[in-house]
Length: 214
Image 1 (tube, one colour):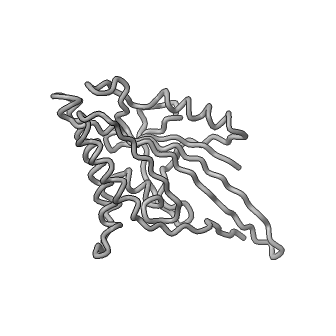
Image 2: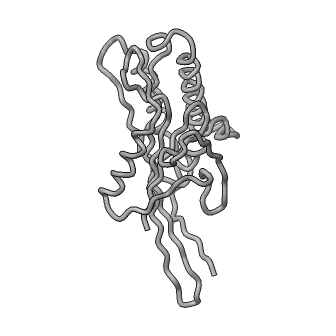
Image 3: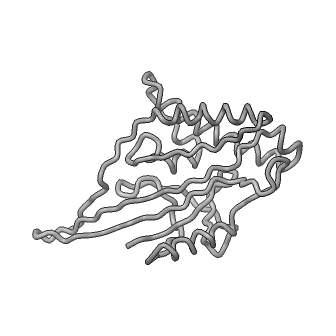
């Protein structure tokens, strides 16, 4: 069985991009089998690639975007598109063994510097929230790559909690860093490259996700 889900984190609030009520906010929970997850997040069973793409397109229409001086359609939220594959097998002893694999496609919010994008009002507040979540992510990456660190601050933001498995946990992670060649964006490019350079040193511990039920 293949399920598709789509959420965004906007100003530290979780929205279900596939839910009819876009004003509704959702909570994070944690369990031994699921790890950190979003309670009551919509899930659609998909049969093929085109159905998965359709679910993604529906969610994209509900994403929070906003024009800035640098990007007319800059994303103002972090988005996570989740594809979960689950299969089960009944063994001779009658126990059912369930295996679960999950693919998280993460699109981080536009990180243009505030001085180049907004000057005042509510847009500045939104930019601050984005910067705060990036700071939390950076702190987690730094802690994971520091051999002397004894605490990983996953709980500092909803983004880092949801990505806990991707950052030093039970997964294989690929990070794509997007940069530009223009000298005007030199500082953003340098910051992005430093981010990626630290992230590549994170050591994950992937394993098969399997549990049994009687």
